[in-house]
Length: 166
Image (cartoon, rainbow, N blue to C red; front, side, top):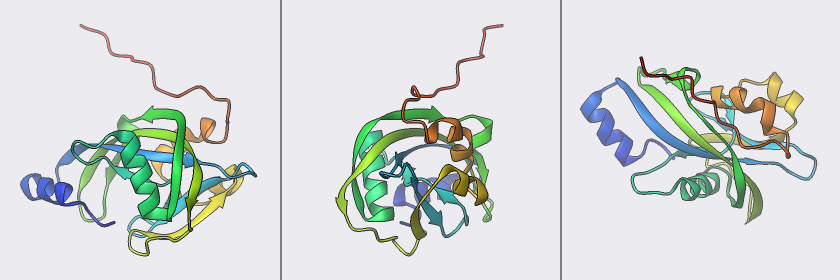
């Protein structure tokens, strides 16, 4: 899906300024251990299915909705892979928009549907091995999550706090 009405309204008010945006995605692996990824049309990078959490939407619902919109698959969430954010997830878009993403990434499995990229936001959907994913352009959060994306036994990830009062 293109930019949501909510984000469009925000951008009308703040222009290209930095926005902090909550997002959710799903790491789905097939029986061979490959990860389901989508090729984004505007960024030309591979990323697990996901997107912005709309106002009032639960992160889990956003993850399931975005996966269906982008891939045609329905999924069941089976756990949390991790929470990612910080300076590595600040994105400068070609149109000048800036966003700092905070992503809740779930583990999940396909429960139904038919594989079909949406053709607007997503050009292609496929399963990739870790080695294959490392060979193609992929999102910053996926790079940050790489050590646990392909590890079924990894504990949920979060970066421990380094903040201290002065």
